[in-house]
Amino acid sequence: MANTKVNILAWVLAGFFLLSFSSLAEAAPVYVEPDANVDGAILNNAYVGVTLSALGGYVGADNNVYSRFSSMASTGTQVFGNSWDSEGAGDFTTRWGFADFFQSHLKVEFDSPVSSVSIDAIGNDPLGAESVDLGLLKAYNAADELIATYETAELATGIAETMTITRPTAEIAYILAAGTGVNFIEIGSNLIPTYATIDLDNMVYDGMMLDIELQGIVIPLPPAVWLGFALLASGIFWQLRRRA
Ligand SMILES: [Ca+2]
Ligand SMILES: [Ca+2]
Image (cartoon, rainbow, N blue to C red):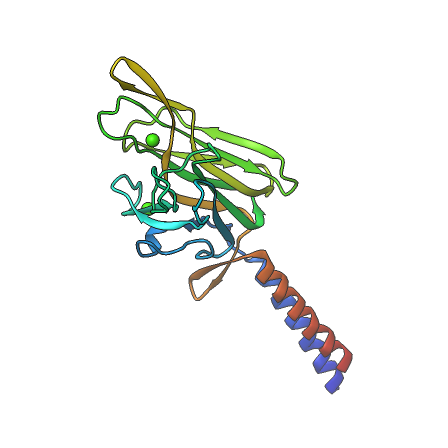
């Protein structure tokens, strides 16, 4: 009789576990927002589910991503920053470009591939520079294949455009984001080419994050945590079954 009770308990536990999956909320947007951190904070591992880094840049750039104040932030006061500056002095900047040897571009790696990602590109040329910026977002799969790109329209100073890539399946393993194209600055009678750089802010991703709702509070959990739960639950289940 006791064995039967344990057996029933095991099946009830298994049932509750399956129910918890079937009642999952829709995958919710996950915000990777520099405003959540003080000015100068290193953001590389500051958010659940993602790892941030700054690729390229001047010699001396440290490849960290920082929370950095920008008057052109599209949300709040902070944008993504890096350690490159125009003199190569290793100071913080908010400028991101795709010219490897002297511009940093933002890399965001996902712990598990996602289906959708967006980030704001913001034109950051000095007012009156008579130039515009272009933003570029590139998405790669786990085999390092470029699977989608998004390029903005021309961005005037302080103007933001949200760059979004959405795929039918969760296949985006990482993204790169920065300014692209070439600006020409008029100096005297000469047009001097400079690579376009932009500010980046307000990243949001969606896809494999699974939500559990407890007492009305939605908690997004990465799949690795769910896998842990699943292993734990199956372990308990089989222990109880063995006793039965
Ligand atoms: Ca912000
Ligand atoms: Ca610029």
